[in-house]
Length: 273
Image (cartoon, rainbow, N blue to C red; front, side, top):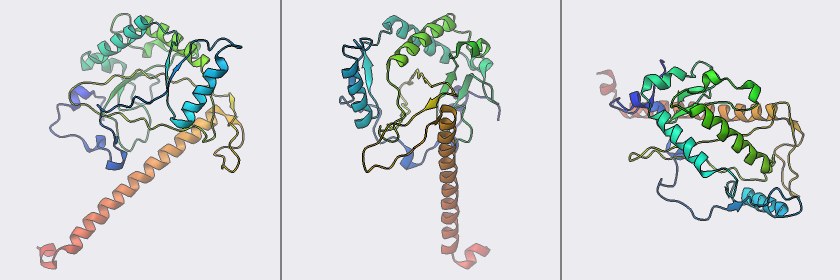
């Protein structure tokens, strides 16, 4: 299938079935219903070893155990930089399709533009356009895969990446052994306006050894031995893809059973007609 954009897909008369999720996979909360209870944690003082650091760490642990998500404030990233990054992102996605497709990343290219996701084996595709790039390690940056439009994109992106790396280094990172909750990441397509997210993923080096947290007495560990981050990530992706494959097979079998049931319910003269 040739590379495309949502602009082109939106012109089709019917929605392609590859973008339709099963009922049990769809978000349960409407796009305009929000919670005011999500933990908000100030990072002011997190660099003070004998100051608020311990208190902030406790709040992060509690938020991860109770919610699996939290918002940080006083993080030190300038609001103008955030505004500039957001503006450049919106301007990129507003470019004509041919400009975005100059950075098409289908076919295994490392970084660039694509519809849905760069992950292989997706059972259902997401109705979204994404542009992805790799900032770290710096020596591995491939600027040929970074958009050169709108003007100033690369400069703002470099600075934004550096600031976000600084925030990530301030936060504690745990392999929680199932102790921390994994919040569902669900976004609802809104027919009235587009939605923009600028996600930053901070991972250990592939060869880094990660250790699971101790669990409470009587609980069963998900992971017992230290492993490299690369192996942990490989296991996770393999599990996710296998679950998606099994679900796809189950759905296909359900459709076959449904068609067979309809056929069995028809009189023989109708079948032979």
